[in-house]
Image (cartoon, rainbow, N blue to C red; front, side):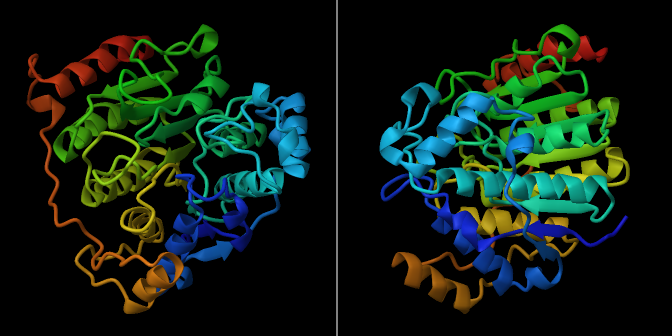
Length: 390
């Protein structure tokens, strides 16, 4: 297996554009790639494009009538059918929507194929992570569900165990739904509690059904959770599950919207804690996923200048085994690019100045602590179904 990481990129991904004023501003993708280049990480990875996902690939997850509806809305946005979640406030139809969405999906599928075939040990598609799309509907800024398509393609290629870990602030509902009854896929989502945030799913009691019972694990975090609680929850749940499941490939989703500056959610996580979880996922892939098979995706994130580019540039650096020094001064060339594109001033360093620390679950459970209550609810609901102690 090649030790060189693959970075999936195509300039055309910025065509995934819901229009002026929509939170999912494609400038976040262009600025991320600009920062990757400013740090020279494009020379440390194998930068590749991939073909847009074709009909047979899209139908691994999505219904034929839904793909037809996306194509129709893409050709004529005025014809968007809201019965399919298209032409809504969250998912306005736009010309070329099918092509841009299929390209992002194709990049994630290409990442999965490269890792499965041993062409790359790790592969990153920060343009992906569109985890809310359902088999028959768009939802939550997501048209095609590229994480689910990447996993489905891995299964088609012969994978018998794929683990999906989602640390976006929103529940990874579409991926969970796609594999709800499939014992070959373990989905783990850490997200803000459904009482306070879209999509109002991801309760600890959601654990899968049929042959897939115990295959869905959800940690519903209290609003306001910061670095210490977020990291405590991650380490109290994810490593034990992965050690037990022994995935052949680890797929992770790194939405940057857990950040305290994100305008659409209510967690209080720093860039430094996000980087710590990325590092943990990298280490867990090497420990449990057949020597390091890791597909890392982006996701949400709506602080498009201050947070998203820095977060995902750290992700690329970690996957490339060339991590970016958090204390480094961001190159002036990138800050000039930020101002030229947005008329905003970019951040100066690759850190929020935090040194995240957390208390191990093995150190004890505090029944009066809301974070501990959330972790305990998850372990009680899901762990015994996998033969693990709660």
